Image (cartoon, rainbow, N blue to C red; front, side, top):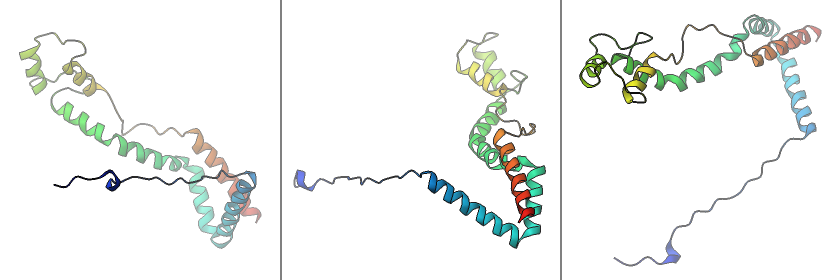
Length: 161
């Protein structure tokens, strides 16, 4: 096999790029464009616009749906793992379930003692922990309240157009 010379070795080059930060004029121009689009939407589709604003005012938790969806997607593997641990017999706030695989392992290997920081104690703790409660009360975060106030302001603006 012929030897490879150093001139034939592949090289990796990375080109640089420039990121420009907006100044106040760019921010103001962007806000003006957003308000212009909002005004056109309010004028051309008044009833739909008003209906959407009313929904967002009375149900501000809609603003939290994307974040709750991301949370559910990110926690899904942990929830599956916890379900498997609980299926082995490490119960939910009940300790080790009777006649389960975990109970037989506990009886045969540990007797009545569980060593601290053992895998068995960690699985028992993980099975008892609540990762994500599906029926939890939705608390409206601060940013959703701010969006709600903005929607009220936009609704008032729509009536003044």
